[in-house]
Image 1: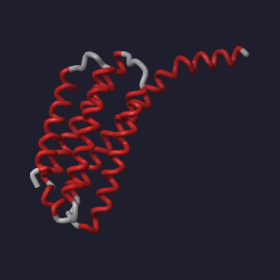
Image 2: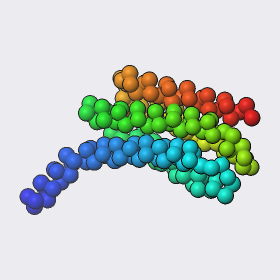
Image 3: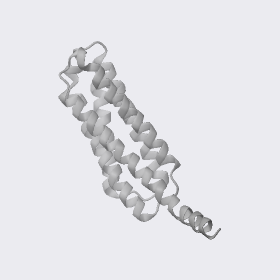
Image 4: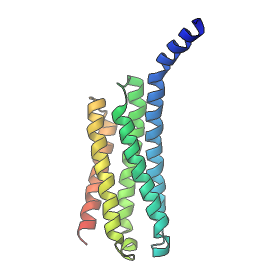
Length: 171
């Protein structure tokens, strides 16, 4: 009985840490997915035969964004240490979003070579922009005092995503 009590007490103490760990892991995964998608876009030769691979990568990234946002919204109140770690990872993800948006615009001509390519790229940019906006709202709710680095990163990402959206709308 004593062992069970000790185990339950330890589990209760570790549960918030495990939740925050899942949150950090999910944010780290998003950064990795954004980076992998960006690398796929920049290395993509622009041919229709290789487009499915790129689209699969983009779909995986969008799915990861949705999952991570759900984990973030469900997270418990954050400690100041958790907030610092998450803020750093969120800033990395925001800057990687900006890089992806910039490279999608730079690859616009490659997307024009395949049927509906620019429409697909425009939808991808819009989906990333929508998730960044949702993240921003969730961040403001969870972390009332956002540090300047994260705020700047989010603003830069949103600016690039808005520019990318405009670029693809001018087709």
